[in-house]
Amino acid sequence: MFLRKMLFATALLLAVCSYSQDTTNTSFGKGMLNLIAKDSSWSVKFAPRIQMRSNTSWDHDGNQYGSPEHNVLIRRARLKFSGFAYSPTLKYKIELGLSNRDLSGSNPFNRNTPRFILDAVIMWNFYENFELWAGQTKLPGNVERVVSSGNLQLIDRSLLNSRYNIDRDVGIQLRHHFNLTEDIVIREKFAISQGEGRNITEGNQGGLQFTGRLEVLPFGIFAKKGDYSQVDLVREDRPKWMLGITYDYNDDAVKTRSNLGDYMFLEDGSLYQTGIATLFVDTMFKYQGFSFMGEYANRTAENPIAVEEDGTPTGDVVLTGNALNLQAGYLFKNNYEVAGRYTHSEYDMETGRLPEDQYTLGLSKYIVGHKLKVQSDISYGTRDGAADNILFRIGFDLHF
Image 1 (cartoon, rainbow, N blue to C red):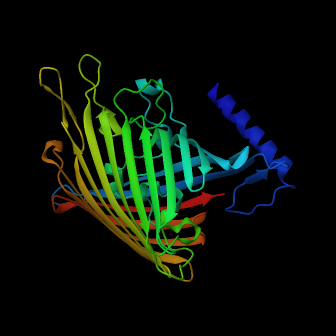
Image 2 (spheres, one colour):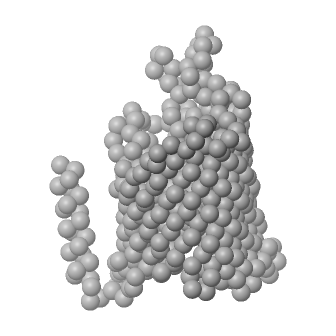
Image 3 (cartoon, rainbow, N blue to C red):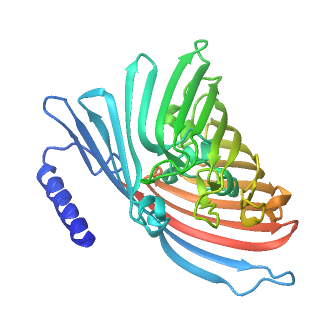
């Protein structure tokens, strides 16, 4: 049944594209389909994208590196729709994920179904510089997470992000910006969400999640939203800098990584609850092909070890600790870029995890910016100061 529905939707989409091929005015990287109603009452932009990856890793057993393990995968395959409805002040975004990693994560609270929906959000510019968002989308967390996976400088995000990010959730957000001076821009972002991540259908199991973010841009706005896109593709002719801080509190959280991770079930089928706080401090800088991103993350929990009513540990532990991520690159005029990254993550004693370090060197060729690119990187990882693994990755992005 699902396959038939997908085939029908694809056929319908192709029919629309075919019918519209003589009336649309778009080009590669601007969306496969870009329509505006004759009366300007709505618009739609359709932009599919894929990412293919090849990973080869060598694990260290304490004496030597073992045989390589290799796999090739479709890391992301997504369909994105955006535009406005009724008025240009009321925008929307819908993004669907089709790859295995996008769909995985079924559980009793999403009726054990695949998680197709990544984003389904409306954004209403209701007054001057105020915007109200409602639906499911990324929370205003660390800059690396909010940057689209299609706009990354290296093959994928860092260990800091995979351990501590707050990802997507369902709720509302209020956003505002103003000019403190002619150059200095201040942006404020606030969110109240359900606190259990995306595609939850069975009510609110814990408390609510509260997120606030403040951003300062001392030298004005980045060209083409470059503060939320890695690599200085536009080669900023003046230095541009963003400094941001996010504080997130998930009240009575029921998952091991705030709104991510595993549910902390008790023997009677109920859920263990504890307050989880996450702090991010991050920065983005770009100038004439050089780019730098720095991030610090810290997570604490009121009672990180999940226990039964009698005090017996369940085995679930909230992932608490802190991490530092530093990343920089230089884009040459032939659109090749060399980039490097250092990430350090250490964990609280309760987690039983050892400190991790990762050193990454990458080489990328941007054929049509981030829309068509080939990337590769190699990483050397350590655990508690000892050799742990080597990872080599290569892949491409295609984004209409």
